[in-house]
Image (cartoon, rainbow over all chains, first blue to last red; front, side, top):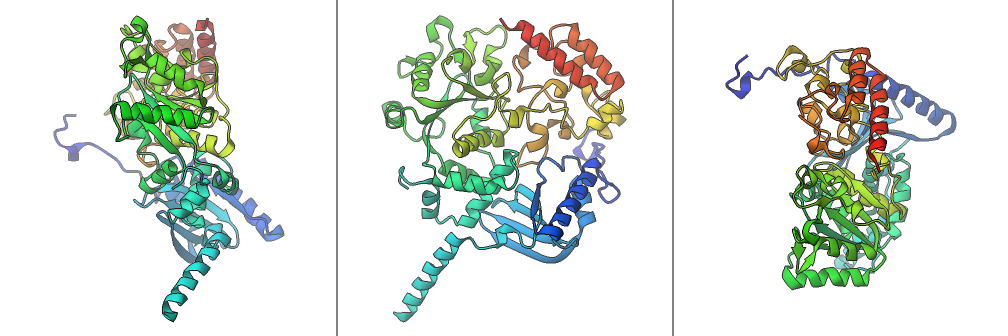
Length: 141
Length: 354
C-alpha cells in the first residue's frame, strides 16, 4: 500500500474501554484483596509498585476503570505534583508521583488508612514552626 | 553547599522538604525494583551519606550516553540526583577547559582518593600505544589506569565502554577495547546499551550511594536488577509469540495488530536490558512498542552479528546453527523455546571465551 502522508499510516488505537487487560490486572486485584484483608484484620498496610506490572497497552486504564474513583482526592506539590486518590474500594489508594514537567516517575497502589505522602514528617513540622515564628516576629515588628 | 554536608543537610539548604525527599526515595526504590517499604531505608541511608565525588571520563564515544544520562528522570528529579553527587570532572558538561580542567580532575582524585566513583563512556583505543586518543599529552589508557587506581568503583556506561561497541566493530582500526580489558584489578560495572536507558544509569549510582556497594552483577558484569530478564521475557507482545502470531512485514496486518516482530529480526529473545519495563522518554514506550524490533544493542558485538532485520532463526547471532535451530523451534512451539535458545547462546558464548 502506497502511503504519501502521515495521516494515511494505518494506525489502529487499542480500545481500552473494551479491553479486559492482560492477566496482570487480575493478579494485581488478587494481591490488593489479600492486602485489604490484612489491613482489616491486623491493621497492616501494604503497597504495590505498578512500574513493571502495567506493561501492556490498556492495562492501566483497565485497572483504573475497575477500581474507579472514590471519595477522597489530594494533590501534593513537592518536586512536581503527586496525585493521591482513594479508589471506590475504600482503603485502596492510587498514588502517582510526577515530576515538574508532569511525567510520571513512580506509581503505587497503597492499601492503608492514609498514604504516607499525606502525613507531615517531623522535620517538616520543625520547619513549619520556624516559619510560623518568623511570621509572628514580623507582625510583632 | 559544602562538600562536608550530608546529602540531607545539603538538600534542606536548597529548600527541599523531607516530604519531597521521601518522594525521590520512593521513585528510586521503584526504579531499583525494591519493595516500596525500602523507600524509608533509602531515605535514612542516603540522608546521612556525604556527597560522593564522581569523575566522568569520555573516550571513543558519540556522547549519546551522556545525552541519555542528562535526560534521566525529569528535570527536577534529575537535578536532585546530580545534587546528591559531586560531579567533579566531566568534559562534556564542565565549564573549565585545558589545564584548568585537568587540574580539577587531579584535585578531585587527590581529595577523594579511594572514595570517588569513576564513570567511563566510550571504548579505549590501544592501537599504536594508545596514540589514537590523547588528552593533555596522556593517552586514554594511561589516564584511565591512573584514575582507576584511586576509584571506589568503576562504572562503564554504554556498550562501547562495556564491550567495545561500535569502535571495536570490524575492522576495529584503533584496537578499541572495553574498560574491563584495561582495568583488571577491580570490578567494573557494565551498564550496556547504545545508549543505556537513562534511569538505569542513575539507578546504579543510586544503588551505590544507598548501599555503599555495587549491585549483584551477571556474567557480563551488568547489574541483574536491570539486566536480569530479556526484552522478550518482559515484552507485552510476548503472548503473540507464544500463540505463533508474527508480523511478516512492517506494514502487514500482523504489524498493524501489534503481533510479535521476531520474524522481522527482533533480537529481544537474547537481549538482556530494561527497555521493556523502564521504557524510554520518561516511560513513553520502547522500540518494540513503536513497531521496530530490538537491535540487541546491550549485547557484546551486536554491530557485527549480521542484519538487524534477519530473524534469530537464521543463526547469525550465535555465529552458528545452534541458536538458529533452537529459535526456529521456539517460533514453532512457542513458550519455553526461547529459554532453551538463551541457554544454548550462553553455552556458545562460554565456548568462545578463552
